[in-house]
Image (cartoon, rainbow over all chains, first blue to last red):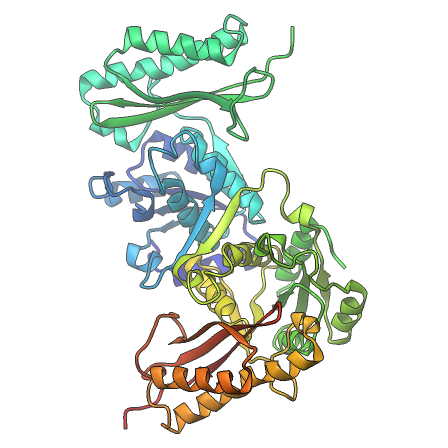
Length: 285
Length: 285
């Protein structure tokens, strides 16, 4: 395990010089099957798999769960090894944000919408740490789960905008049998809320199917359907936002002519959950 | 000459694979001896010299001189060749800021002071374009003139904060015989103002000497001396700021115990000039 950023640079230089392709999975640890899926894919497509674990203080708000965020480095290390990780990078907050640290990276419009308003500073924190990690690991490919869809779009935009010579790969959300998207924060859910939580993905997938079948012809009709269904099936679920947006620009749309994403954030008790499904463009009839 | 960012990536990958050390001088063109000095040094210390010319719209304010900024690409190319440039990179604004561009990099405190207040957005524009160019060219060393001292400190901080595996080298300001710091904008000066302008560097150097000789024992005394001297010798010079700061943190200081910088921005007619001198720490008597 590497903890020192300078040492990571040395390893990166060495791997690059040796002509190895580097696949990278940046994480906050507490691995579930979603993380392991990213790692297996990253390993399959590259010579070397680098995984980082860093619970990034900069992306948590003052009232968020930085201190409570679940951590289990021993279990994570052995899981990472099992799936073929060649290098596990676990830097300290002191090394990543030394005294005098003064830089931030923002992807401006893309961070201002969906989860943005309820988590001020979150995506700048994500963009900054991910860029730092990219510069330390210098991957050919980096892998992210599409569960954090806005994060994926922001990182891909940042990589293009800053001319990084690498590829950002998004992999489909891994789900429980119930449909609930895997998340390290799911451990906070009560057993009852866990059942209720599954209504979110079920309803999003139902909407996706009805849109494809032209039973929900417009974004407006689809949103109404989802709101009604959730109100009936999960009345204790509080909807923070529910939006249908262009899948690339995250801008509002009035038809399903382009690829789109149905994205939602909800609260069950004090647990905040997000989920999304993609909708392929429908050709005009 | 390379104009396409993708082509620059290809060249960079090729040079890196071949094990070449890359020295880089990013510029806005209209070369003077200051630029050429940076290029010669970059070439002397590296296998390959890459020079970029890009007049970056993002670092000009709406009331600044983007359209009027002097350009002479034919002369610049031949000068760059003469000093041994291996690769001249001149991208277009459309390629550097394509539709949907959404990312900005800020070095926050360091950009908020000195030139910051009078040029809102300027240093974020500089940091963003320089990071893009670094990612395209992937230099081992990048060279900047210390005439733009705050810019140098900001870029060095950004490189450290974002864990870029490269060195930022600052070289002393190249000056006319009169002491006037070379600048592409000096062509805007009338002959009369050009003579007056020299009073700025002369006074800064005088202060530097008197500080070293303990005749100006405190920053306050030194600032008073400079203000008085300029008021007497260049009454038509309008001082935008005149500050003595810690040379690394750019924070205010009350003694010369640490290395410091005397930095000034002035106006002569509608021409804005900046200059600075460094002051080594004096040991307590």
